[in-house]
Length: 106
Ligand SMILES: [Zn+2]
Ligand SMILES: [Zn+2]
Image (cartoon, rainbow, N blue to C red; front, top):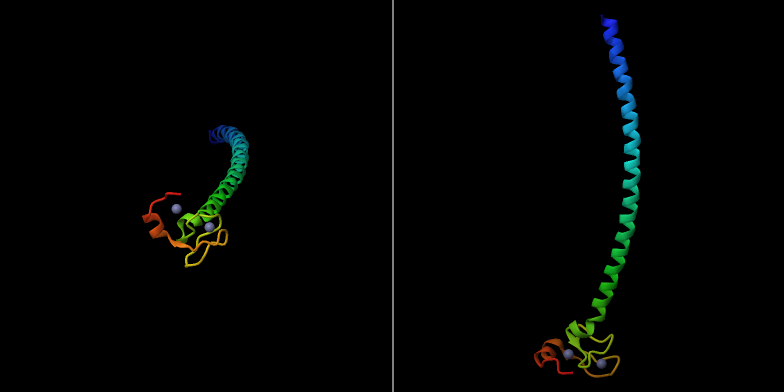
């Protein structure tokens, strides 16, 4: 009685082992797909970071509009946190507050 029971159990065990092996193959395939998608995500993330840095450059280019002191003509590369004159046209910087108070009638 005991032996026959054991035999039955071992057959079941072999079947479940085969099932596990099959599942492991599936898991490996899924893992491979996951790793691939992870790499793709990392690459696309790097692309996103590049887009972000270009946005930062655009913000720096906006200094001629957003600095504390700006050139009345908003020349490229002008604008400073302190008083001075525009390196492009030589005009004296105006306080951004006063300039904006006058309105933008360029
Ligand atoms: Zn200027
Ligand atoms: Zn202006």
